[in-house]
Image (cartoon, rainbow, N blue to C red):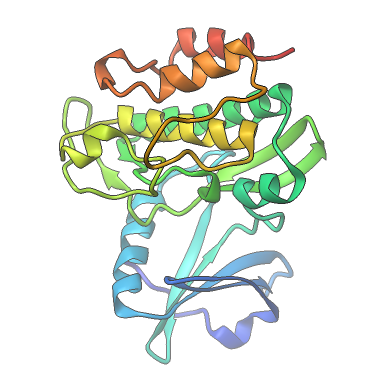
Amino acid sequence: MCTSNRLRLSDFKDLEEIGRGGVGVVYAATQPNGDRVALKKICSRAAAERIKNEIRAIRCLRHPNIVQFFEDFVEGGDTYVVMELCPLGSMRAYVKKNGPLSDKAAAYVLRQIICAVKYMHREGVLHRDLSSGNVLISRIFSPEKISVKLCDFGLATHLKKGETACTVVGTPGYIAPQVFKQEYDQAADVYSMGGVLYTMLTGNDPPSKGAMRFDGLGLSAVELIESMMEEDASKRIALNGSCMVVLCSIRP
């Protein structure tokens, strides 16, 4: 991790806590040029190692639907990371508060996620922890048009086409079966994306055990979720033209 010798905590003003978890604390803050940013304070050595991994994964990623990394610095033994601010919270929190998205709104969001993941995979990065909690809302134009960005690359790994990963990581309910078998590739991210779509359309996280409930969902939406969360990775839908054709069909 390449830390900055220029930044200091005192450079940031108007700190407002917007999140807290096992990794640390996240603040909305104003940096010297006046822009509002997300400032992560990492509270443990183990979490600092995960953040180092995140920075390695996203430092060179530049995509409108991926949260941008700006800089990192160390002060008083604590690691701080400066990133793009998405002030509207996660998709998981949004649907828990406001209820499921419409088919049209979910399709609009999923297109953005697909574009980001396809780019990420081309760059040789496997996210490994895609979930509704790691999809941040950057702007809401209307209930049908919500802009999002992927975040939390702390479990990401670099993986070339044809290679496989073996570490068991991820969020329960969103983890592909192949992850538990310790041999998986980019198709594991597709499975997780199906879980995100399920959450957007039902308001619930996909169950880690037992069958999913599709009450009230249209047939096209159900078929797309099932094709993305197909247990057999070789039969799982790919992020290509066929996926987009199916996606278009879930719009009313």
